[in-house]
Length: 423
Image 1 (cartoon, rainbow, N blue to C red):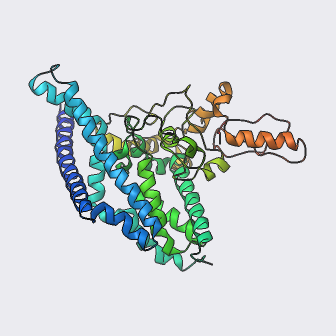
Image 2 (image 1 turned 90 degrees about the vertical axis):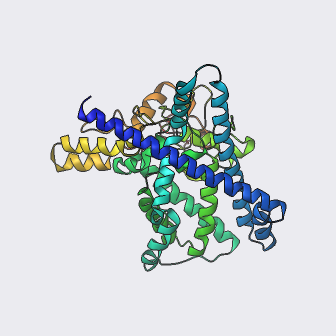
Image 3 (image 1 turned 45 degrees about the vertical axis):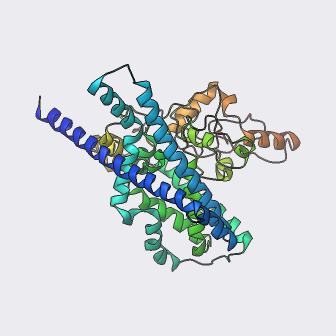
């Protein structure tokens, strides 16, 4: 065996050992904490006080967040324990001894290794957690803020819309700028979606996401005292929408699919299919996706394929976590001139000098040229209604965008809508 192969083999063994530790440590904390809260709830504390206490003091958002967090924790434990139990039952009698346990370990690692190792890294680097970064950045940005809204009920609506806008900007840029995609890609690499996938984030991504949220929200006048409540709701719902198809098969949530981002929307976001790629960037409200033409519902005709645009061994945490950085480094090393090197960093994933055919926008537009009806959504119906009612009085912006950038271009009323990016 060559030195490189031996080193790789030993590294994978080390990864697996750390995964076993992380799985045991995190599951012990989850189960023991959850069990203690259930026990305390019987005595009027625990979950009960977390929901009722804030409600009685009119802190309703805390009660709402507490309910979502309790549901999330319950579902996470259910998903992990039921999946493990199903594996044990499935392999009973098929394999014996070590072969049986090796197969069970491999299947567990395929689904959960990236999640538990990523969460372990974040727990070992607490200063990089989003909430901490907010308090570090905020005083520096606040010096340049021109106005701040009050905390009346209507200001909360405004503040949440601003937050959702900043989420859309952060999320869209993370998919359309190659360097930022390197930070964000670990979250999309798993080939199975479940609630622990919400743990899979590159630790340094918090720097960028925090900066975008703060700069946009504070310059739009959002009061800093609102951030904690907004972040709590966003984080709690953001975890729930990763619920697996094994637990909630449909995920559309009935009529709510027209009002909020549902698990079905977010499964589409995690898909690598040309129809679904780079859509549904919002976290809770679909407004900005709708306005910017990136809202895409699930279509029964197109089954979701999870993952990113390359084959990734999800049990190889190093590739899943750092693989895109390595590929970017390779492209930078082989690029001619400073200009091309900068463009490799700033242009969308898949871009190469003189060619945009492999970018997400181009792949999606190419797919929709022959399957336009699959990209037809409520925004298209709205624009068509306007076009019918006012056939020549206004110009309707193009629903889609250019292949290179995905930015909307002008469209006249006499043209049929372009469904390159639906919304």
